Structure formats: structure tokens, C-alpha cells
Image (tube, rainbow, N blue to C red; front, side, top):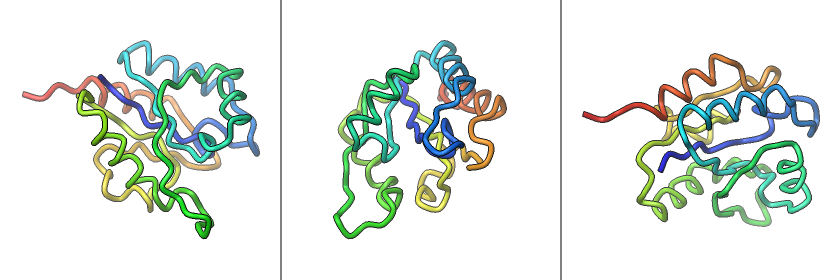
Length: 140
């Protein structure tokens, strides 16, 4: 199984919570060319209303990372690396993965799997090409 960990803010949404339909098309291209599964790693996964809006906008995720945040956390991305690690540990069937996220600092342990986006631009075709290459990479 191939997994694409997907953040929303700064990747799919650069306009205060509105999903860019062109970016949905790009995500679907990644799925089409890699047969990957979307794993929602965004804090949006913690709000059922936001999750439903993702489905309505065409972002069809099958999995989400566990929530390791505490009530004192100000920013959910603090635990993102640990949440991704736990999800991967629970899914040994994963053969390849990539992370699309706008937060580089919290994902330092995954620098080789991270495709970092710019919060003002979000997902671009360059990111899509890198994700496809990363997910289709074969180990010799």
C-alpha cells in the first residue's frame, strides 16, 4: 500500500478554509498515477464538519492519523511527526509514502519524505510530480 499524508491548510486551502478545486484535481492525479491512499494528517481530521466538507469538495481520504495533541497545545502540527510515525507503525503494509505539508519544522524527522508547500501558494504541479516520483520509487 502506498500512502500520501495530506495536510489541508497551506496545501489544498490557501484562502481561509476554502478548498481550491484545481488542487483537488492535482491530488486526484497523484492517486491516479500511484494508486496511493490518502491519509489525512491535517488538524481538519478532528472536526467532523470539516471532514464532510473535504468529501464534498472531492478529497476522498480513507485514513487519518491518530490525535496525540493535548488540551494545552496551541498548534496541532507539534505532534504531526509522532502521529505519522504511529500510523505507519500500525500499518506495516505501507510500501511507500510521501507527506504533503506546509509545516517543515514539525516534520524534520521525515525530511526525505516531505514535500513542503508554501502557505501562500499551496500545492503546485512541481509538488505533484515529486509526489508521483516518490510514491512510485522502487527499492532495489
